[in-house]
Image (cartoon, rainbow, N blue to C red; front, top):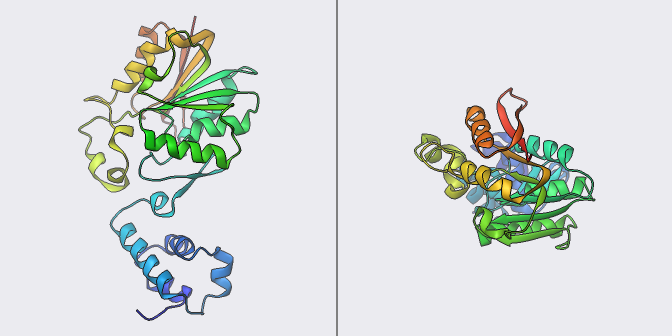
Length: 274
C-alpha cells in the first residue's frame, strides 16, 4: 500500500469528516492539531492500514466509542470496550440527581456499574462520598477499575464488587443513596439487532419481556438496604416512568417522582425510604 497524507485519507473516507479525523487521530496516536499542521505529508503505511481497518469497522456500524476505546461522560474521559455499555448523555441526569440527593458523607451504592461512569462521576464531584459499585461481569469491573485509577479514585473511596444486583451487598449493609442504570429494553425489541446496540453487551441492555425485570428486582430489594430517609434513583426508558413509579410504590418507597431529560422524556425515577 502506498502511503497517503492525513488530508488525503480523510478526503477519501466513506465516513463523515469528523469521524474520519477522530479515527485517524486514534490510528496515528497524533493530536488533531498535529495532523492538520502535517496534513499534506505522507503517514506511515501501518497508520494507513490501521485507519482503513477502523474505517471499515465503522462503516459496518461499530460504535466510535469502541473503535477509539474512549467516551466522554460528565466531563470525564472514560476507557470503554465491548465488555461495557457505552455511557449516554441521558445518564448524566442520574448523576446530577444523585449528587443533589446524597447527604454530606453519604454511603452510595451503584448497582450494575459497567464502566464505572456513574460512580466515578459522583466520586470526582463529591469528595465527601464513599461508594460501592457492583457488576455481575468481571471484565466490566476491570474496565471500571482502570477508569477509577485513571481519575485518582482509590479503592478506599470506591469499592468494586462482583455480583448480580443485591448478591454483592451484605445483608446488614445500608446506604444513604442507591443508584442504578440497569438494562431496561424488552428482550424482543428490534433495536437490539440494529445500529450501534447490536455491538453492546446484551445483558446490559435487555431485561425480560417488558424490559422491567432488573428494575423490579432493584426496587423490591432496595428497602432492605436503604438507610432511614435514604434514596433510590434509577434510569429507565422514556415510556417506563409510570411503571417504575408503580414498582417503587409497591416496594414501600415514599415521595416517588420522575425527572425528565433534556428531550422532555421521563428518564430518572426517585423514591425515599420511610
